[in-house]
Image (cartoon, rainbow, N blue to C red; front, side, top):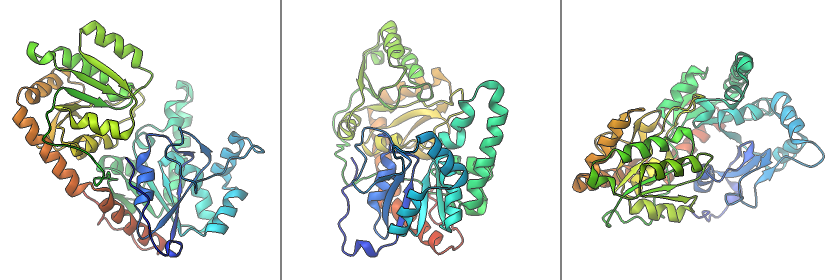
Length: 401
């Protein structure tokens, strides 16, 4: 659940960051809104090119550039390649932001030229797919992919030339940004964190079964999870499995679960409070993320922190940025990516040893409270804002690896 909007006196005197994302805002992008609401020394104004999602994350102050006179496609091209937007000029003139923070590298490509033209410092955060699998490349026909890769390289270079600070949400993502051309001296790891003051977890409550939370897509590895559960020893195979989330693979996964004779509840998408409740009753949380066919990989995985905060030990593949969210052997068990028999053994190890599972769950919760509290992580972000606004060299004091 997003934290409440902080109440402050003299808010208008605080420096303003214009938070940019082309499509504002997907329901899954709570981390963007949480960061904005968690600011104490800065205030934020959300600006996008178009509206998306159900609207649950929108605030009344959010601004969108799209209007019915100019088509979205035409406006996107103008904004991305020429940095021309009278509406954005008006917003900047009225609100006088001290800097721009663009979320996702592909979205930053739409605003970098504008930031450079206006002389506004630019902070860019890379999250995951935008670094491992740029849509311009993965969505292109095979014959056009070399051209798409060159376009991606040019767009990324333009962003990196402009950006004062480049943030990776994990070391895995920061390294990917550097491989794409980001200056290592201006690239920093800053984990996002999650709200810890509003959770209703009961770490010592009775726990049963396995829980998965995430999109039902190839990357999330739910088919591997079902296969692994089906291979558990007879007594453990009867444990219930709850799958929270939706996606294009739902029907296929429901059919697979029925064919394997598993006790699976496909709960669909749930509000954050219900997700927290389900996680707090899980004996094990398992999300075996995989590298997708288009190269998309898990940048960090906020859901692993949410599971740990709820006191659930984690089982997953050693993949992408997951090892930064899960300490193997301490807060959960990680196995080689794609090794389904090893996934089965890890699940059996925790389901068959509840005391060990509880110890790992407690360790995970303690780690989140100590290292991934949203308020603390936002303070680190504000330090980066301060340096960007004053055009001081980037420091890595915000890194917490």
